[in-house]
Amino acid sequence: MAKIKGNDDNKLSCFSTFVDTCELIRLTPGKNKKVDLISRYISSLHEDSLHIAVLFLSGKTFPRGSSHNLNIGFRTILQSLLEISNLNDADIRGIHLKHGDMGTIAEHAVSKKQVVTLFNQSESIGGEQLTLGDVAIQLKKIANLKGPRSNNDKKNTLKALLIRCSPLEAKYLVKIISNEMRMGSYEGLVELAIAKAFDRDVGNVRDAMLATGDIANVALLSKRNSLNTVTVEPFVPMSFMLADVMFTALEIMEYFEKPLYCEYKYDGIRVQMHKFKNQCRLYSRNLADISYAFPELVDSAMLTGIKKEEMHRKKVTQDIGEIDGADDIDFILDGELIAFKNNKPLHFQELQKRLRRKNMTKDILSEIPIRYVVYDIMFYGKEQVIKETLENRKKLLSLFLFKDSIIVNAQSDIIASADEINSIFRKSKENGHEGLVIKDPLSQYHPGKRGRYWIKLKEESDTVDTVIVMAEYGHGKRAGTLSDYTLAVRDFGSKPGIDMVVPESVDPIYDGLKIIGKAYSGLSNKEIDYMTNKLRSLIIRDEGNRIIVKPEIILEVSFDTIQKSNRHDGGYALRFPRIKNIRYDKELKDIDALEKIESIYENQFHTKSN
Image 1: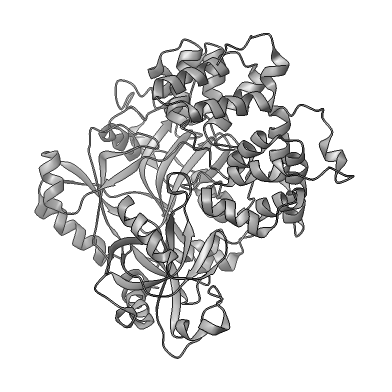
Image 2 (image 1 turned 180 degrees about the vertical axis):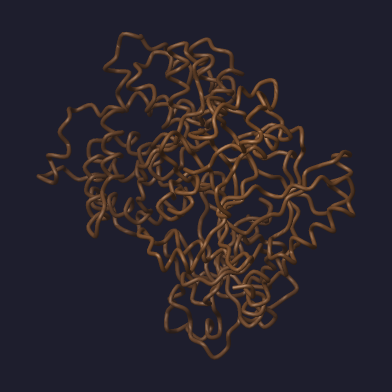
């Protein structure tokens, strides 16, 4: 790619320049060459275009912490493409079956688009050349559309934008919208490219990412040579630190060979609490603002102070600054929000009821009380503390004075043997929790990273034998393969569920089956290839992105827990299912019954404690 002249701002701001660069990145092998392409492109961008381009290259539409959410579905995108082209449903399905990629469908559809009439011409105002700014404005407009007609309004706005696109522009526009920017460019490569483009130390770029999680802002600060000014931003949530998995207490102790922190693993919602000045906001694991659902927790956070008897302590460590005031302290905490009543944890689904309501009444607050269990801190006062050891972060947390029992510090036991882990594990299960999380006292807080600093230890749940009744095509590396499976169990005497509409001629095949969820993880690439060929031989009806199949392939599936669900006609759903085995040795008559699912659900301790 020839170097783009820095003063050619009009060309640089064009969406076509962005997509040409994306296509080059996709077609270019090798990490270093991809980094070079990204670097050369972003180095000449004006700031107004830089932050948009970096977001799009990283597979994002809005900066982290943004209140905007596109919430535009597969069907809305497909309908938009059908309405601007002369393609029909069969054409679209054929392309999807072949490529499994929404971007490719969009590219083909726009190449066949019909002549634009008077349709929403006002939406197309803005000049012939579509710019990065135009795209960003229209995506924000789509995100802001609410109400009963919002899906139709979103479709029309998207159609107007697609009409202005060339086929290649349409391809990448839809890739951005559908979160399918899989062209070999991802956040890690963009970080390297930012460092190279603006001649910054890659370590400083990564530190800035750890602090803010906002790659668009990091790119702007790098261009301005202001990375040294980066701090954790109030109300810009960081990615949560993640835990790895081990299967026995002995395995854990043999790996670490030293004393460790041991904490209960709670069945709740991971929540990041930001309290700055006179505001507090709560963020879920997907970084969504969920403050509206837990107003009493927000109120309690505003009253948090520091224990007065500890005020004389000047420093907790060499690096954490002075502890100066019992009131008006700023902090970011990490913890688990659980439904908690009569000194017992309630079922995870009780929290879901709160999240589904926009207005909290006194009755709801009373019916589903909560507790926020704090186990880490990322920011205190005026400084981020993620580079402190966990031991020092725990010391800092011990100084906090929470005003009521809605917020408590997690109990952290120091353990030094497998027997101690097993003993605490049993207590965790007896108290209605999921298991344990074991933590290295010397570990730093690593946002968004999964490593062997925190280890989950959970008791493996029972498995169920299920049959595949539907299969969907995957995306990216799984494009063209049937890798997502809808599963059913026996319930003789019932009729087929509403999610499984089949031709009358084959209705009896589905008598007595009830859907209990989907699974897509656990199989090797070789097994997925086998499943794809086998499932295609069992097709009853082809629906484009999914197929209805003869119920013949039996899968043994493990899961974390079972929850009630109105999404599946079985009335239950497997939480975090994983395919354990393809049971070549079993037939349809051997699959488990819905009664087993009901029994497992009823015997989950936290359900009985409701």
